[in-house]
Image (cartoon, rainbow, N blue to C red; front, side, top):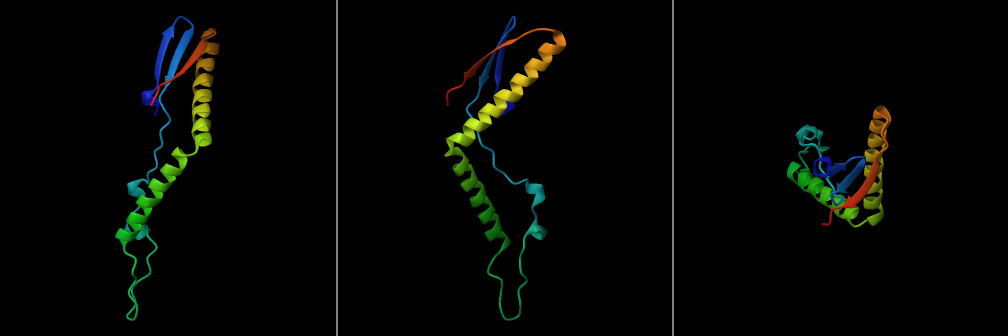
Length: 112
């Protein structure tokens, strides 16, 4: 969450404090409606046992499982942190090039 990143500047030294990695795993609620579900119609002989509520529960379960899987995978979290650092560092370097200033970036990680 970029809103949780803290930055302090002292001359050309920029200290960046990254929050602990977090995982957001949600389906855009506007992208799902009852027409989005694959539901077979009831027939006179056999009623479809799967309801929209069952499918909502399955989606919620899948989201929770994805989140747990990611949180239990240190290499994914490490990769996400590395990518965040690279993006921030590249941005600061570009600003430095425009202003002809060489910034020294000091990284810190906020503890959980």
